[in-house]
Structures are given as structure tokens and as C-alpha cells.
Length: 250
Image (cartoon, rainbow, N blue to C red; front, side, top):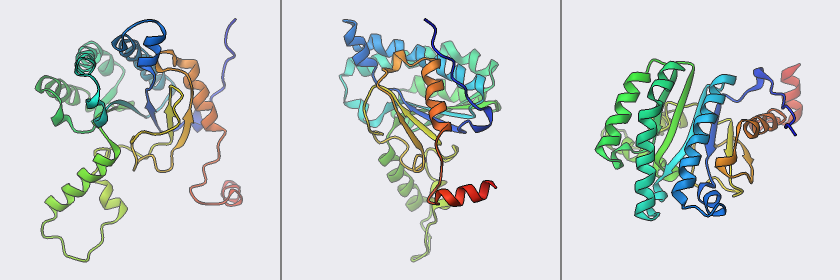
């Protein structure tokens, strides 16, 4: 039996979609496999969703790839994730260039191996002029860490900043890892957990949240379309009343 087709309105797509790709380990355990098996399957899902996002016209896609807290996982699992990431960068380089997808990273690359840093730097240069979609990997990233890092940058770079002067939200945002990205419109979390886990705390301030019990390796294009369709049914008010929004439309 085929799944019902989901209608998505091209003119109402979220500009920026962010995804917490959760459930790889539990998916693997259900199949009697090691967690690394789930991460490999999850990487294939990420490829499919990136391609689908590009196809339907999503301009920005951010994937929560590895958090600052993930360093607390068993060393062998961390090493396996980093090796998988390195292989995927090599494998997908040509696809990113061909499909005009710009690759960026949100997070502290200095915490990664020199080899990974070099590969990312090369890909930044090779995809920097691509314009159809921006793919951001949140890597060695934590939302609170991002804010603290921004504050420290301000303190360092504004040594002569006049005491008593205020930093505006617009000015502060320039110092974030995610400064080059627009605010998140839709934040998706797979795997059944109902939290955002320190992900893009600043950029997701007004994001629509979508939670699904589907483990990330099972999150296919149909699941993605369901999330987008759900988003398109919502009324985004940004503090205004529903009546105000209706009046602005008329």
C-alpha cells in the first residue's frame, strides 16, 4: 500500500529548517546492531533529506551533527562518528558542488582533528559560491556555548568599548557561530524526545517545533513532507494577535 501524497505549497515553505537527528542508537539496538550501525544509516538519511530539501526549494538546512555534550560518549563511538563524517565529506563533495549547495559549519572547528579541519576548509572554498541552498552542520556545537563564545568575542574585540553603552540584539548576533544563517522557521526533532537539547537557542527563538517518534534512520522524504505540511498549517504571529495577522493579510 502506497502512502498518501502530501500537498506542500511552494510559496509557504520555511526558509530555514533545522533538524535534530535523534534515534540512531536506539534504531540500531532494535536490530541487534551496534550504535555505529545506526549512525551509518543516519548518514544515508541525511543525504536523502538534503537532496529533497534542495529539490523542493528549502534555502537553508541545518543538521545537528555533533554537540559539545557528545564528547562524553564512549571514545570508540566518537571516533566512529568522526571517521564516518570524514568519509562522507570525501564522498559527497562532488554532489554538493554539482547541486550548488554551499556547505558551512556552526560550531567550534578547532576542537576537531587537523584532517577534518582541512577537509572542511577545502569544501568551504569549493562550495562558497554556490547559492541554491546552504547546508549547515552544527558540529562541536552547543547553544549555550555559542552565546558564551559570542560574549567573549565581544569582550576581546571591544576592549575600548565605552562603559555603559548597550549591545543591541542585532549587534550581538554578529558574534554568533550562526551569524551567517537566518532565524530558524521550522525545527524538527526525530526519535520521540520532546526537547531541543541546547540546539540553536538564539536562532530558534521563534521557530515552529515539530516532534516525531520516528527514529532518524527511518525519517524519509514522506516524513519530511509531513513536517513541512504541518508547518504550513500554523499561524506565525511573533507576539501579535491572530486578528492583527488577518488584518495585515487583507
